[in-house]
Image (cartoon, rainbow, N blue to C red; front, top):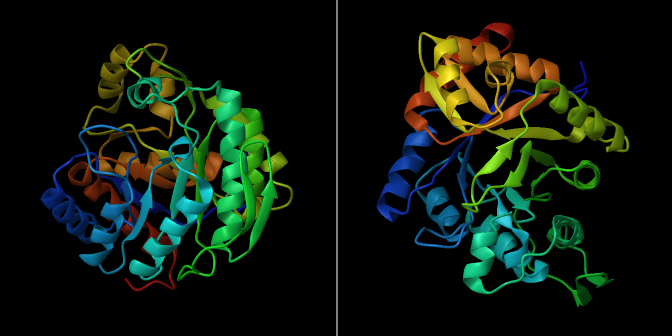
Length: 321
């Protein structure tokens, strides 16, 4: 089966989706205590917390939790201004920042702010150009650039705390994935199709063979850096149950185009007992090289992390028991 050649240890992220600033800090402490590795915000326009400022607050009430927006809408921000903000956040969080960025997808949000919603190919090309500029700026370069979307003349920013701030690019499509394989540290796999009428939901393309082809394409286009890439999957539902097949069937009934086999195999769902879910994640790790899983439910997933950490210690005798 196709997968990236390096199997990495598991990492687990928690994405906070509420708007209560007090609860943000409660959940940050809880995520760290539950064994999560990364705390995520999200980037949407509306009556919700913004994506960047909360990262500093989260780092301020935790000790080891890394912070990462999952993902920033590239179209909302000019790359030099964004890179300056990111470098500042990395300094204020003592080097715990990871950067997640994508091309934008919610046409309803573009409409609400009066911004043109360009074709996917244009948005993805703009993301590709911006991501390279952000990478160069965060790495300390003075950048002069004359591109299709951005024009810079000896632009520079403050240096971040980390020598290399990890960059996660969340994309789909062959050309966009090829670019991410060449430039990202982490690829955020989505396997989504067209955005639906609500501007938020998507068609799902969670067939295992489609993901096989995607991973193979990433490996082929990574230009010798496959071993450097980490793969992330944002899990859309965590269901703790003794009847895995029945719970999967309930989700199938709610998601158009999803089959039972897809639901039981995809890395974007975590269904079963904690032990069954860990076995499922291990299968996804072995088949596709996905090691970084992000979820939106601390309570349901904390038991999964406990089982995964225990299994990791058993398989690695160098770790303390």
